[in-house]
Image (cartoon, rainbow, N blue to C red):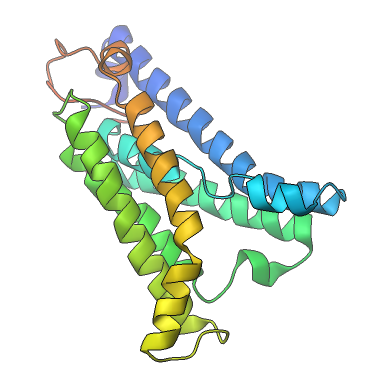
Length: 218
C-alpha cells in the first residue's frame, strides 16, 4: 500500500517517528564530535579528559528504537549509517586526522550498531520497559565484545595473544560503563509507554509499534 493511501493520522505518526529518531541521531553525532571540536579550540585539560562522558551516548538505544518503529528496516539502517558516517567525518574535520575517524576497526563498530536494528525488530509488539532495557544491556555487551575484539585484531598497539586481548578489554572498561549507562537511559526514555502510545497508538490496525514514513514492503 502506498503512503498516499494511508490516513492523515497515520502519516502524522510516521512523521513524528522520523522527527524523534532524527533528533536523537543529531544529538548522538554532536556528542561524539564535541570532544574533538573542544580540543581543536584548546578547551581540553586534564579535568575535561577524565570527566567528559566520551561514550555516554544512547546510539544503541536509538538503533533499537528505529528498528522497532520503522516499517522499512533498510530505511532505518540507512539513517543510522548516515549518522555514523557524518559523525566520523565530523571527527576527521575537527581533528585533522582521518585515521582518528576511519581506522581499521571502524567496520566492526558499524556492524555492531547496525545490528541493533535487528534487536529493535524483536521489540515491535512490546510496550513495556523490561524487554527494551534487557535488549539494551545485551546490545551494550555485544558491542563491547565485538568492537574491542576488532580493535585488538587491527591495532598494532596490542600484542596478538591472550595478554594483548585482555589488555584491550580492560582498557575499554571505562567506555563500556558509559556506553551501558547511555544505552539504558536511552532505552528508558525512547521505549517509555507514553511516548510509544503518542507515536503509534495501539489501536492502529497493524497492532505494532510502528512505523516509519514509508510503508513500502521490506
